Length: 284
Image (cartoon, rainbow, N blue to C red; front, side, top):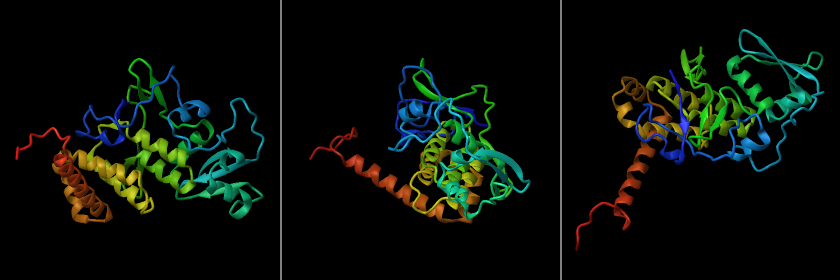
């Protein structure tokens, strides 16, 4: 089971220095004058630099939404959701649909049979509130960002029937946000995933495969996140029978992992030759 993690002042790339134990951290802390959440998209989200450099298109707090209601039929069980058309249109994917390409004009209905209701529910929550459960909260006393619900009640994995096992919710949201053209949601999902810990190797590897299958080859964020995680926690993965089976199965991820390991070793070798290296040097 996942446990809630905090986020202190260190770079994202150093977040996985040890293993998936309780000391693993991720992300960069951001100081704030008060405890706040991502409900205020105009302040907190921008403070974290999770927004692109463009105006905030979220509906102002207290505004009356008067656009048409769209019904979204999600998953094989056809679970129904309802949302305002102008809210959905913040996504380029849904903006194109609501302009008439695929929308059933008489019923204002969109069918998403391949989507998971648990993931789509979080997407809608983000579109309306600027965040999804569990929210990011700033702990002023400790000066760290953390996920709400310290009792560990937050759901961090979602069962994917196609994969036949649990996958990391934030990874699935990242991939869904990529399809829907929601760049801010991608950054938020990646940041939240970095605050999770206590993750089983099998879940990480299955989620990494999902990430590779559902992101383009030029993705430089989520794929790199998993490669860095595996390299920096190589001691844990080396003892994992799941890792051995995954490597025997093969796939592009493991070639990328090989390249990343080579680059990591080259960087270490270069650092050891630096005049600023702390390693003792043999006098000439």
